[in-house]
Length: 551
Image (cartoon, rainbow, N blue to C red; front, side, top):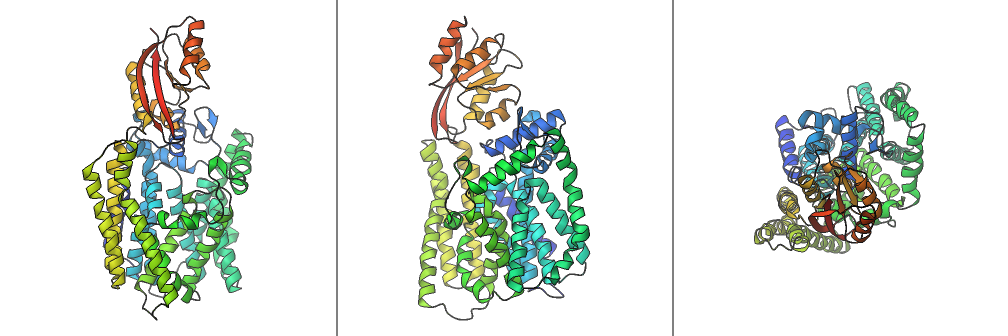
């Protein structure tokens, strides 16, 4: 509980949490190929920045990519420059900001839980966040959401300290708050404001007090925030002639509110319905903590966490476009409440109804745990037609650990229950990300296609002309300037004819007849030089691609 001498974690405990987070998120970081479609679009845009030196305009090949500000591209550019090079096409380097942000979020959650509820809660909350499926997925891909989580978490922690008024340096805390808002606005525009503003509004409505808002020091905090964001916002406005704001806010952001963009629409209740999977394995402890949260809702620290979670959750349930990571910024607060409930004194035994609901949910959680345990084996068996007894055997570890988790909870041994859940998560993520997914070559078409095209390329800088396979991962791996994404076989033949015999053409089964017919009318006799088969997981379409070169 916060006080004059708040509980703190030692540097050894922070080191332990950092190691735990790394162990959870590093498997698969370098072995899983570039993922379509968002990750590879980020990587291609970052590569263009590095190659051109233009850090204002954001483009995928030559097409404007005006969805978010440039912050994440700058971080990826710094990581690639320090650890690799754009020519190396090493996707792990682009993923480093996400991985480090996830580790930082775990450490901040540890600080938050310890300051509010004590050392054991801080360690447990951080561990639950480190193990959770959603954060682990976002930490392994070169996108924005793990970094955005870390920045939102920083802003919320500063806001919490200002709300509870338990700090010796309020001006420094206010500066941290406004600085985090500025960084968040550079990452994903006003998304950070959704979490912060709904938290503030909920607290004002709940407390009916506004005096604490003075501690935000908005008179100099807002200019500080604007000093961070305005230079780039003005520059991109001039470079794009205002098109960035029309697309990013008018089309992308507001479009997500009104309609389910890119086939990601879902009715209200979506985030609640998938919570057991998204926050697994910590979802078990989170749901069982609901009675504790309700009983302690008048405590200021619990009230703040509720105001953090509930309004943000409602907003994203009402928005038409839904993706699992949208509610990720609420997970640190959920982890803190779940951990606090685990170690709280048992005030009274639950009634029959609550006990029955708890048992029913525990069984549901166990079923989901078995699904995760079988994930690695299923991926290899179903997508690669490979029966691997070792992967199947390793899957028994998380299954047994999940059963042990419930057993220790039943026996009121929370530390052992959490430890068992962490073992289950670590075994699942290692088995799936480091073992199974890299071996499913049937679904990784881009690496095989890029390698095959480079092997038969007749010229040092042969363009790769491709239809209908247009995935961004291919653009990243083969080269943003060398890859030509064309509409159909006819256009592929025409580009082929204009290449002076240097192009490699990759056409699918449906496009081959028109490609060959048009090539014949142009006086060309393309020679088959290779075949790549597989399934495009982005649209679940089977592909049979033939590579052609000039005779």
